Image (tube, rainbow, N blue to C red; front, side, top):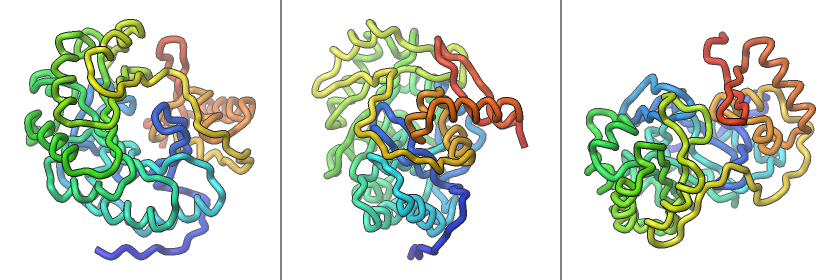
Amino acid sequence: MRIVVIEMSREDFKYIYGPVPSRRLGRSLGLDLVPFKTCTCDCIYCQLGKTTDRTIERRDYVDAADVLAQLKEKLARGVSCDYISLAGCGEPTLYAPIGELIVRIKQMTDIPVAVITNGTLLHLPELRRDLLPADLVIPSLDAGDAPLFEYVNRPHPDISFEQMVEGLIEFGEMRKNRLWLEVLLVSGVTGLGAEVKKIASWAEKIKPDKIQINTVSRPSHEDFACAVEGGQLKKLTGLFNGEVEILADTVSLTKQADHVPNATDADILNLLARRPCALEGIVQGLNLHPHDAAKRLDNFLKTGHVAAEKSGRTVFYRISRENP
């Protein structure tokens, strides 16, 4: 498939969002390649809610030429970011031409490309090859055996735990790029020493460059998916070998962006459609003044375009799916 980049100048970036303030990647400019909640899993902790299309079918969900044209325009406007991330509101590896898209992005810019995936399709040899040109691949492993994988991730019926971990191991052996393994732990479920030991055993076979320990930090799909307490999280990191880090609750940006006075309402809504954010996240991601961001959010709440939800002491804003 040959991708031809077309010129565009419209204000609406349908497939581009952010930059997002990322605990892993600093300022991350996101590319959304599949429809909302099109995924191989229906994870209990997902911040975007229930999966509406649980599938394993890899398709050309969006026009790659449009994605590249929008990215070209966004970069031409001087957006400042540390990574271009293929992530969004579904599983990005379901996008069939993801390999060629990565190659074309790297021809366009020196900004490193990251792929954030649940890893469930890495058993496919063609997908493993597709991801080789990326600078960084971040798959996840949230359970150490089949029963908990089924309980926590609720995968498509044609995905087995053994199939998934073998794909992760095979990619770990063949890749030349950086590989970080994210482990998201749920209190009382996978956030227990015995369960973490199982995950750590698989991680040794996958051989990532880094293991990132995470827990629930935003309103989750299921109310019973709760965060592991910080002290316990720190203890559990000791069960892993190699480089291990806890993803902190606070965002630490790797560099300060230039002021972006032209961040539009559409930029904010595009961001919140893919990722619930606190006020601070919106301010840091789009480099808005806090008062400006708060005023716009207040207007969105009044019109029903945005909803607010509290998690712990933090208020998160998300797009309202009920609003037409």
